[in-house]
Image (tube, rainbow, N blue to C red; front, side, top):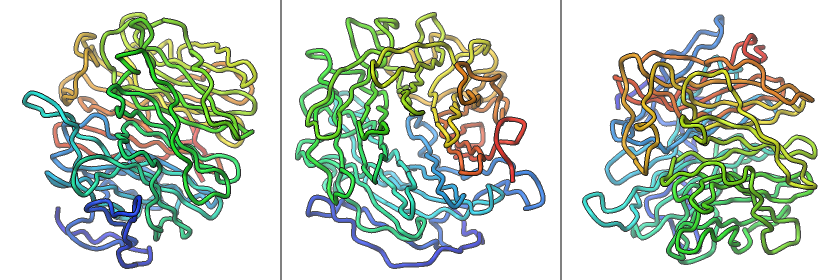
Length: 469
């Protein structure tokens, strides 16, 4: 990648050793620098301060084009800064985690820095593929004067992955040593979620095949603690099958500190969303509580997990299933007191197939949703059928666009959905969103077209529900 002359305003620091479990994660480093080097990634289509922000694109590598599982992550802090992180395969045996931010309401994003570089872990397997590569899948959160970044990193010997969490007290300028999230020597974490709760508590959930099948595990770092407690089995799944093996988990805290973990369960051949909970002081999870009962019978893995959000005494869930044939996105809600869910489609009027919904509750009690949806005709048989990891088709009349809708506080249905930034022939996928304290809505996604793959981020216009300063 060529050198770029992007503005660097964050303080340079030396490399920090990331100590994990008493030993370094191989090839992993934390950098506070924003170097003008061959590793820098320049944003394109950057608007001027006088215009409404247009989508900003960060080019990914040719090695990323076949990957449909990595997803960008957004977070906003109380000062209005918005952070964006993503994972990228930057060499045949290297995965990197990039971080950037905007301090001017999305008019410009600073040049990304590689916060982490690590090796590539591939699961044991048979046949030509020899298993599947694990992703970095970063996670972000801002809490007061602290900023958190978590991700998956391969061990030095390539034998396993570890989930680590690093903390910054200067808005992502520098990070302390990465801390291990789990303690189990045989842990094999994938499809990780992170949640940040009352008093600075942190909870993580993931799928783990240490017992032969993918099962759901979680660990908690209580408020005021400096280390995570030993991980706990959330749900073992069906004997001999576990849970759906390649759908991301989701996690969130309730107001009382209860940790909720959502996952795609397997129940008599059905692949529906379920939620387990662990109350403060407990050492085991309760549940699982089904969001819907035996709705989608499917022999395969759709690679499409749930999303959680909390408003007051209510838990909100977003997910995809194909009970009616094509994939559709749904929303359900339940009171914490009874965990009995009521559900409906997020965008019943949308004609295309849908997937990968994400929810976000803002400080005013509004519920925001983003998801991907096709335009043109996408054959159902080719869409998430079976268990596939190949790249999507791009070009022509078929494509996918990120959609956005909001459910105002006190309402029970989402307002009319709108495409965020549709691009004919492009495949937009894996959206993320964040809302600032002033109400500005930011959306990021991965986009693949005939020119390659990019991470794209934009601030929504006022007409779409985003508050533009």
